[in-house]
Length: 375
Image (cartoon, rainbow, N blue to C red; front, side, top):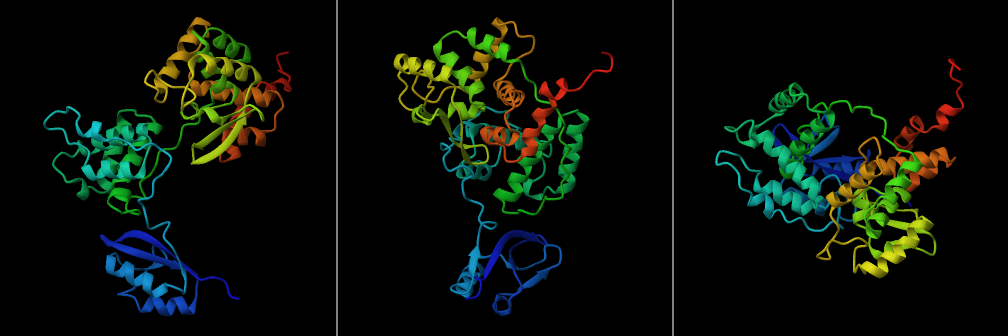
């Protein structure tokens, strides 16, 4: 039995026209069927065949290859949610903001696409803010007519303002989202150069300082929050999304669902944290999320930041402490205790070991084996 034939469709802009790109492995049957399509052409740049993008041609593709080849639409369809588990974003807040009369608002189709893709609320806020800054630099031009030259000029302006690499990348992401996702031009701005990412070591504090922060929290709920972020190596968003049944006390694990990269994973559960969580549950009686606000909804991210910041001040920690610093400290302390780097990668949910390897640059055992020449 022969291998299953397949073709992959791409949503492209070629010569300022929307087209359907068709990529396939060399095959006489598929090549013969391609020739029967409406005006097929070859693109040397993308190394694929393309036809005009229309409902009629898409239907013709389906009918032509039905039963002959499997059609892969993953690169063509762009309306699938990024995170189906995310709560639906209410973009009305962005629509009803009080803004100056001459200020250009984010286009409605931009907001609708963000809602459809179910981006996180913070991402929506970031994209809208950055895209509005961009289009307000060109108040007399239709955003559709702006091209790579306009974008580069805008980015140069940000560079002159000494904006960070992270800031520039967020601006590029917001702009590309409009042209490539909203307008369906996925290849239009591929050649926009991104700034090199600044290489910074993670900031960490000692285990003793972490314990001091926990000891200086205001109440049991705050103590559990800090213990879980540090003791399980959680991102702030992962902590806020925890449900009651995500705490597996029998296996001493924490289930983290649909975290960064849409991946589920398991992390460690501290015995000390579990004892406090049991007491916390009896007193606070959360109904859905493990940590809930006064109205029973998900706990505030800013509240978590403030809990750690205030406890660190009371503990007289010399540097400002953030939730992510506790995650960095957790990983570094595991490495210093001799835990394998690959195991730490799994616990943290890193896609690549290269991300986890950065902790080797701050772990004290990296330096303890080296004799200082002054000594």
